[in-house]
Figure 1 (cartoon, rainbow, N blue to C red):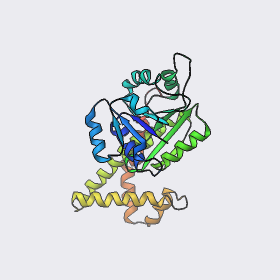
Figure 2: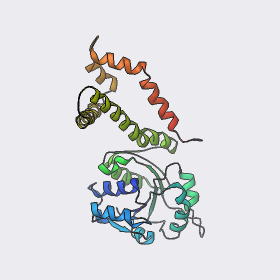
Figure 3: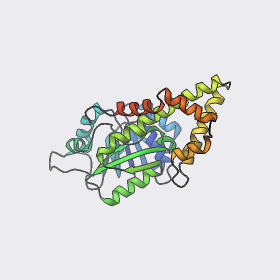
Figure 4: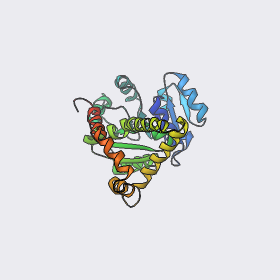
Length: 268
């Protein structure tokens, strides 16, 4: 499956690098276009086999999937340009533009000449897609079951992926995309605590990062639940329960939930 990515910003370039190392898409089957060549030059230095261009028409030629990775205010003029270039019978449009749902995408890509529409996907990955550790959400309209399965399989090689109803896309955005920042903020706070305890900043970050990896890996063992793993290290009157209780007294769980709810796009 050949991919064209329009937009070489953080998420567009991350997707290109992730796909290039997915094992399902060869680097030379990926083209990324951008209006400014500086970003394309950085991509070429890192992964020379990925094709780059400043011409969208050149980039989408022969692509199976055309991914839109631009700022929201650039989407309407881009759609106006692309909809007369695309072959709606053979090409899929997949948007990673946050907050622009399937109905809006259909409006933007409905062809004036015949009212035709391509299969359309709304995608929400996170920046860990560059290291193939993303949590990606997909929702589609006008796509076949085979197309759903193909794209889902590809994005699962880039971490994990879920095909969900569109009503859950904003929740996915908050948990997985905003969630990257929230997880990193926790790591930073824990690292600062490690420095206070006597470790160097570099060693503290190393310890905390590996501990986070280990904690996540435990949840993959026979569908383990966080509380059961917490119980394993929480002895009666022990150190861990003291720490947990102190965190809860200072609003640990409440602050996380309130942060998630505050992140939901307004009006959604």
